[in-house]
Amino acid sequence: MGDRSVPHARPNKAEVFARLREAHAREVTEDYVEMIADLIEEEGEARSVALAERFGVTAATVNNTIKRLERDGFVTSRPYRSVFLTDEGRELAAKCRKRHEIVYNFLVALGVDPTTAEFDAEGIEHHVSEETLRMFAGFAGGKRG
Amino acid sequence: MGDRSVPHARPNKAEVFARLREAHAREVTEDYVEMIADLIEEEGEARSVALAERFGVTAATVNNTIKRLERDGFVTSRPYRSVFLTDEGRELAAKCRKRHEIVYNFLVALGVDPTTAEFDAEGIEHHVSEETLRMFAGFAGGKRG
DNA sequence: AAATCAATTTAGCCTTGACTAACTTTAAAA
DNA sequence: TTTTAAAGTTAGTCAAGGCTAAATTGATTT
Ligand SMILES: [Mn+2]
Ligand SMILES: [Mn+2]
Ligand SMILES: [Mn+2]
Ligand SMILES: [Mn+2]
Image (cartoon, rainbow over all chains, first blue to last red; front, top):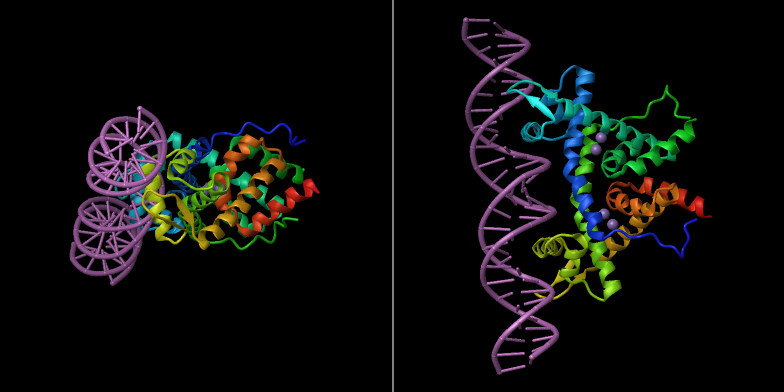
């Protein structure tokens, strides 16, 4: 039980920060594919005006980001038309949505106010490893079941 | 108990993402002041070569960042000398260190492997509200006490 | 005191992710 | 069918945060 005489092997700090930077590099992509999937479900299509409104950024910013997502194989788009997810994009969106939900439900199960949980989950989700995610899911499941 | 008929007032998505972007803007600053405080405690001074090694970035990157921190009032520095925290920098470092510890201890109390917890805490810490932090501290405290 | 080596700085480059302003296209109204 | 409004695009700007390569400074050895 957390035996003081057997400290765990500490990862090199540089490794920790390298992983942090990798997570950062994926954040916007993850939030976009998730939001695009939401819009397609809720409204039948993902228009960039809706993306701009939901993210609170300008249409120009959305345009830039969509181009990047297209370059990276997560979406397809044609001028003046709405945005579509590729298979890869749909896959990532599904994974991110599940992860987001687990984090949100976990925070609420812990006792965090739902509104606060919405704010915090939006950031935390991108920094949760598979292992931690399993712990979160188990905890919330335990509370429910 | 999570009464379905009374949903919570959902924050505008744009507000959630605006807060996320604000948190991002503070991350590097927070990690730097914390690391500088650590180095001063552990080694008596914070040299940029040590910062570069611990963050896993080049000396040039450290130099840029230190200039930004100086501009923003968190550190002082003179050419070819080590870096010092201002009162403001020390204050922020103390706050971030406490928060980091609470997040790390919480993850370990939850059952996450200490090594994984070190990785995840480095990112999660920047996205945890005061309220969530209190819940984390309470949970870990309950396990200990 | 000179030479050398390590640390630091500078200059120049890049990508991401934000913005404004101006322009073009599409869709809706008149 | 023309006009107008909304949506989308393009061009240009900026800051943050990374990099490499080259120049400089300071500290250690010889
Ligand atoms: Mn999300
Ligand atoms: Mn998110
Ligand atoms: Mn930290
Ligand atoms: Mn951190």
